[in-house]
Length: 175
Image 1 (tube, helix red, strand yellow):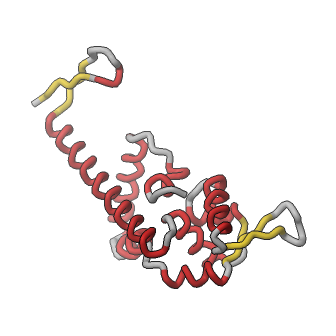
Image 2 (image 1 turned 120 degrees about the vertical axis):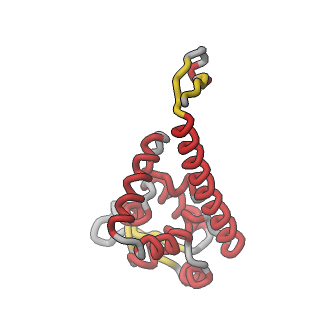
Image 3 (image 1 turned 60 degrees about the vertical axis):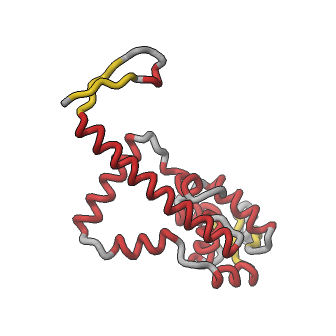
């Protein structure tokens, strides 16, 4: 069965055929995406209430903790956020005395970040991030299942014109 839908975005009266089954499947996928976004939002709000940190800030603190004294570029690669976003996050974390930045003695152009005592303390108060729970559950799947999910989500992101460069800050709350 085929249904005709108006293409409202073009401003015209263009019509395209959409198979009902395909439209129903697309709506189911969109519903699942909304559930994922909602779960992320709920977890982000819980993290904010418990620690006062956004998810992006928590990710950066965890990255610094794991990587040690580190550059913005290395943090950016670790948390999949742009260097500009990481710099903004570091500005806020430094203002709240969770991290400190300093110039390398070998090359003054290089700036390192490290946790302060206050940063290490907040790290201990932090609940598991949604990402960590997901990674553990994802790892328990077979290699084939992981590949299918990854491929399907990559295609979905492309269909939605999503740019993954800074997706974490968009999905998980303000930097």
